[in-house]
Image (cartoon, rainbow, N blue to C red; front, side, top):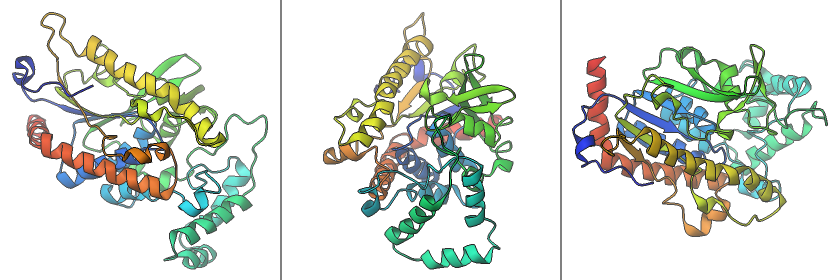
Amino acid sequence: MKSVNLKSPAVASMPARKTGLLLGGGAPNSTLIAGALAAFVDEGIEFDVISASGAGVLMGLLYTTPHEATPRQALQSWADTGVADSIYKMIPINYKIFQKPGMQASTFRDVFQPPASNPFVQAFKQTFAGAPTAWSDWGKLMLSSLSPSDLSSKSLGLCAHLPFLEKAVDFSGVKTMRPQFYINAYNLTEHRMQNWGKHEIAPEHVRAALSFPFLYAPTNIAGSDYIEGAALDTLNFDPFIEGKGEHHDADTLVILDILGDERLLRKPRNLYDAWVRSIITPLVKISKSELRLFELEHNTDAHTGQPKRRLLKLDLMKGIPEQHWPDTLDWSSSNMQLLFDVGYKAGAAFCREHGDLLRRTAEQSALAA
């Protein structure tokens, strides 16, 4: 979908009130979003409302409330979580992100990743500090391989629920961040989509929002089981829909979607790639359909046929080299860095085109508040 024509009389006459940012799901290529958000940071672009789903939840929190880092540093660090190419070619799994589940594995991690005062861990870290990425990642692979696990045929998911989360996000600042912030998860117990605002969000809500089936067990909150919202709604439009959310008056929505591109549908290279693409394939169609449905049912005035608000979709995929497309779902270091750079360039170009509009709208919203 192309951006709505900003010269449309109905849109041009709207008073600037509120800007919204939608961050879609899609973990392997989420550094595209991280790069675009880094460009927004550098260009001073801010939003009144952020609505996120799936991997976009983590990207949005790194953008707004990172732990012991600036937003720019935190977003760049996500691009650094890829696995060295020399290792990934042999073991195409991101053991740095997807870690073993269970109490035994958790205890093992506590031993090797405790507070900074532990002298043994400091010695281990110094062994790999400043080492080339491959050597550092070999050390992490060794630890991952040595870790025990409670995984069995009765387990409900392959991996631990983001054990690094509290080290990445400053949850003490979520409630007081400037923009309104929403994340979604699907309630399996009550069979409904759930949205949480920034005043409710705690680590367990983020884990629920990222509990993709099979990878993670459902997250239980107050007796209800939740799975990742992006598994069903890859774009969380609910906060901007009249009758569902409080921000249907937002007049400009910026959309960062990394799933709604059919170029992601490709012949797999191996069995592991086939499994990854089996996850992505239905999400591509869901994402495209959601965007189209929102545009037709919730963003078109029934009387005039004119758009109710500006929809600006940032084309994050445009800069990916054609020969690189088969690798875009890899967790390799080279792919994650390339996608971060592509996302950054796309975000910078978007700011050059729409930055004045977004800054003006944000300034007017701040004055009105």
